[in-house]
Amino acid sequence: MQVTPQARLDEYMAKGWWKDTTIPALLEQAVEAAGDQVALSDAPNRMELVGDAPQKLTFNDVNQRVEAMARAFRHLGVKPDDIVLTQLPNVIEGVLAFLACARIGAILSPVAMAFRAHELRSVIQQLNPSLIVTVETFHGFDHAGMLKSLAEEGVYTGPVICAGKKSVFPSISEVEAEAADMSLQPAPGKAGDVLTICWTSGTEAAPKGVPRNHAHWVFNGECMVEATRLGRGDTLLNPFPLINIASFGGMVIPWLLCHGYLIQHHPFDLPIFLRQFQEEKINYTVAPPAVLTMLLKKPELLEGIDFARVKCIASGSAPLPPFMVKAWQEEYGVSIMNVFGSNEGCSLISTPVVMEDPEMRATFFPRFGVPDLEWDLDFPSKVRTRLVGPETEEDITQPGVAGELRIDGAMTFDGYWRNDDLTKASFDEQGFFQTGDLFEIAPENDRFYRFVGRSKEIIIRGGVNISPAELDNLIESHPDVKEASCAAYPDERLGEKVCAVVVLQPGASMELSDLVSYLKAKDISVYKLPEKLRIVPALPRNPLGKVLRRNLNDIADS
Image: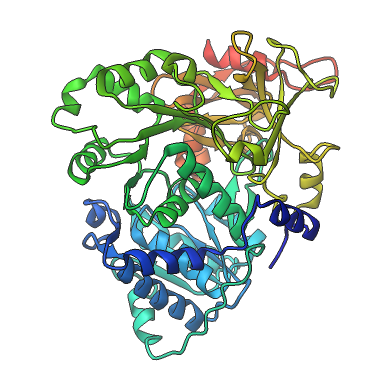
C-alpha cells in the first residue's frame, strides 16, 4: 500500500534523498555480513515483564525467528497491506514483529503499553487490524482480559496472540509451531509502501495515525547513524518504547544499518539501565533530561561504569539544562546530543559536530535546510525548515522573534492515516508541516534556532504527549462538572503533569480522588490522570469565548 504521492516519491528518489531500499533488504545485508554476531537481546528483567527468560540472538537467529513469526502471521490470515497491531513492552518480539511484517508486506501499528480500552477502541476502529499481538498481563494489568472485553462489546479485534507465558490467547510460539511446515513466499513490497502506522496525541481528542514507508525509515536511520557517528558492530541500548520514530528511526534502523547489537530496556528502570550500561559496554543510548541530571547529583550510582566507549547519549522531549550537558562532557567525557522531533516531522539534532560548546548545545538547534547555511553533515541538505509568524504567515528572518517552526523534506510524513481534513489543515500552502512549536533565530548565533515554547496545547508528561481536549471531554461528562479544561504544571522529574481546572455545577463538590476514580472507570491510560485539581468559578476566556490556555497554566501552577 502506498500513501506517499507518486510525484514526491519520484522526486526524492531522483534527488537521492530516498533510496530504493526496504527493511528486509537491510536485514539480509546484516545477516550476510555478521550472521554469527550477537545482534539482539532482552533486558535481564524480561521474566518480570512477560513471564519467561531473557533471550539473546545472533543475526542468523534473528533471521530464523523473523521467518517463523512471518509464517505464523500468514497462518493466521495476515496478507500484504493488512495491519498487525502490537501492544508489547520492550522485548525482542517487538523488533521481530516489525521485521516479520516487513517480510510479508504487512503494516505494523504499535501502541503504548499504557493504552487502555478507551484508547485501544479508537485505534482499533481506525485500523481494523487483521491481528493483535500483546501480552497476557503487564505490571499487574490484564491486557488479555481487556481485549476479550472489547471483543465482547462488539469491537472486532481479529485473532489475538501473546508474547511470553501462555495466556487465554495462543502464544506466539504455539502459532509458530502450527505454521512450521507452511511454505512462505516473502512479499516485502517496495520502498514507497507503508510499513508502520505509529500514533501521536495532539490537541485533537482521538489518537492520530502517522504512516511511514520503508524509504522514510531508512532515511531516518541514516540520519541518526551520521549524527551519532555509529559504526560497524556498535552496541545500542534502547530505552525508548517500540512505538514511534524515536525507537524505530533512532534505534532499530541504525542497528540494522550498523550490523550492531541492540539491547532492549523497558523504560524506565534505573538500576536495570545502569546494570546494562555497565555490563554491555554501550556505545549509544538515550535518557531523559531529568535522569541525566539526577545521575550527576548522585555520582555514586555511576561508580564502576566505563564511559570510554560511549560515542554520545541523546536526550530531549524537554529543555536540557545547560549545566547538565556541560557536566557530562567535563566530568565523564560524554557528549550529550540534543534532539527535538516528532512522529510527523524531521528531527533537529544538535550534535558536537554542529555545536561544540556543550552549554549552547543544550538550547540551540541548527537551522537545517535554510538556504545558504551549510553543515558538516549530509542529511541537513535533505530537509527544509522555516519560521513563520503565527498571525502574519510571513517568514521570520530576524533573530529574537518567535515564530512557528515549519518543516519539509525527506523526514516529513505524508499525512495522517485516513484523515484528509486533518492532513490538509496540518500543512501550509508551501507544503510545510506546521509543528505548532515556537522557536526563534538565536540572537547569539543566527545559524541556530532556540526553542521558545509550544503553540499547540499538548501536555508532555515524561516525554509522552497528552491531549487536553480528550481529557476535557471526559471530565465534562461527569454529572457534577459544568465545564473543564486541562493544563500543564511543571514537575522536576517528568517535565509536566496534568492539572484539571474545573467549574462545578451549583451545589456540587469534588476532590481530586473523586475525579481520578471517575476517569479510571473510563479506562483511560494512567499517565493521563490529573495529579492536581483546581476548582474555579469560571474558565478564563477571550472575548470570542476561546479558553485562554496561558491563563490556565497560571492557575495550574498556583
